Image 1 (cartoon, rainbow, N blue to C red):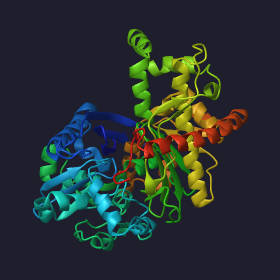
Image 2: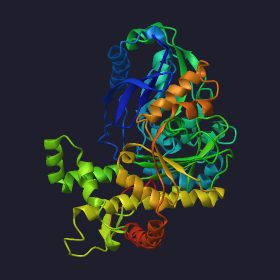
Image 3: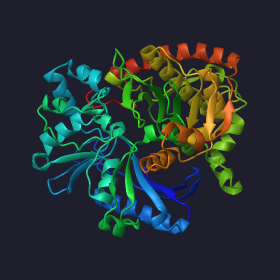
Image 4: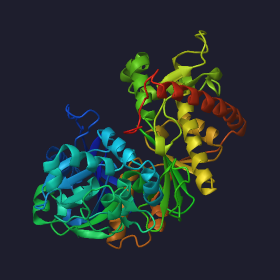
Length: 520
């Protein structure tokens, strides 16, 4: 059989192993769902079960080998990717002793402790690392020190989840910049750890593995790794990266000034730059791309996909029943009706995610506003479309936020993820942004990005950018309706003013924040 490439992807809600041909075609995929439980003792916690989850991961690897019938010896290389921000701690013997998933929020007191220590410290750390306390490892490691001193004393190594997968297959600890940078204990410019950040708040230094750039062979699958996964011993394992960065590789967003939007449970706007600069007001995240020499401004919209799923399940039972009877997707049935609702939803707006403010990150209480009691105009399809328009306007705000930091707006954008399957959402997004939107044909963009890195590591794809351009194909291009864009711009200004008032209500504790970063 021809040579193949494998990606192992540890996402927030599932783990999967995906096999690709050298032409980028997906040959097989086996996926297992997993959950990250809250420890009842620690509100906001999100524990990661490394024993059970490794069992699921290796089952996926074995499963895709069996599903495709590939000879394990024909797998040229394996690479890994994962949800970012999650960390695993190990003792000196290399045994896992503590782990948390990506949006673990148990460290409110530790953030308060850091702010009390020095109110300007977070801004100084951001200037160097591109990260705040919101998702970074600093408060979490401080939490371990404060609440689990026995674990803290044993802690000898800290890795990200993609590094953990490599360790389980090879027995070698490693790290790469695209995910390591999300810890906040990192120098963006040098693309390397900065132990002084940790040491400055009294945390252990020297616990992070050597940084190796993405697309570099780390080690080979050991005999034990082979016995557990079904891979051939000696198979090269290549440094992959964070899910958003490898997702960009998988949709061809690999060069400066390109941009991508990933529409899923959370929406991410990623803008590529060849400069490691941060925002003067600390509003937007800056990460290392998985492509060496490239960085990314990243702005996150909280929970659009989850909001849409809630709305479908709570208010669209008829469409769900019809979808079940006809074999169609309930969202498609809702889209058919919502497309006839005029731009702007008769002036109705909603508030869910806000435009990102990384240094004081919180969101207003969820709400719909400015509707009337006319059922012809304000029915469930109007509310449904309003959610789509709201998400697109948040994304427009993110594009403008990055423009304020970089002086640049992309000429076009790639839109991928589950939301890109909706023709209506694609058209709304295009009209709101006012630039062309390209939708790739690949559905496993992150896994494809990891496979490209695997191929690069073993010399099959010498040039990452060239490989991405050759392997990524687009199935649809949307051009903006500029009259609709002008209408949305007026609505956007009103929406921003409305959201500011709603956020103040939550800040005053009259309503509840949809989400707030630890300590905010």
